[in-house]
Length: 102
Image 1 (cartoon, rainbow, N blue to C red):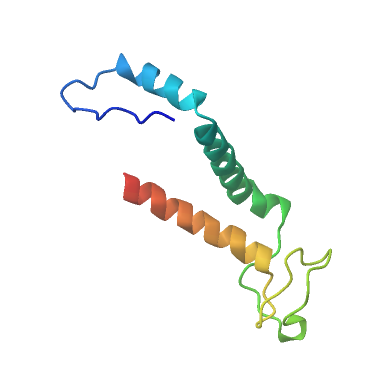
Image 2 (image 1 turned 120 degrees about the horizontal axis):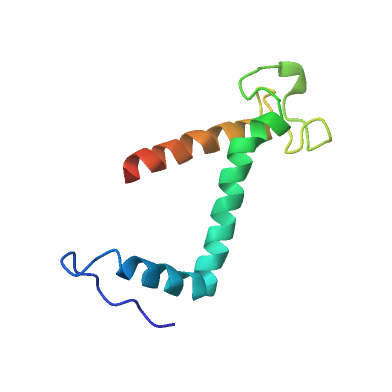
């Protein structure tokens, strides 16, 4: 794999952006990263509608249940659904990342 040359802010223009995107698209690692990132974003954005369990509901009777059709990733020690908490935390993490990038 060849390393990309350093980019000087003076020489950066709109003409170079399509060339950079084309080089990134031809890179196998960049393609895999784009697919994984897209899957994460899609799961986090669409997940709460597809999997409507509450991430904050506490039920000690369901504490530490193993994965099952009712709780795909099981529950934690407070009886909260782990997949719902993962999707909720993913939304927060992506929002923080976008704000930090901006």
